[in-house]
Image (tube, rainbow, N blue to C red; front, side, top):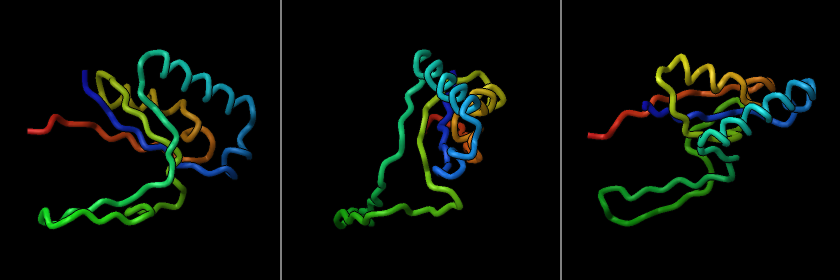
Length: 110
């Protein structure tokens, strides 16, 4: 079955201004996804790793990409189609609490 990476972006302000019942439904949705085997987690502070030309590893704190909202979490989901993956992502806390969720199809590496 095809796999998709979801990246949720959101902040506390957007979360707090979302109706508590809507938030509770979104958390219940996440619980159902986890029970179905979705691997998901909350994002922590990232580091950037480089090893240009195999000459040695350097590590720098912080994210490489920037966005209007902080990264809140990630998931790996399986779905038959992109549309099904979108439907699954649409009920998550970031999607309903004034954030956004990116859905990235994963292709098998050659």
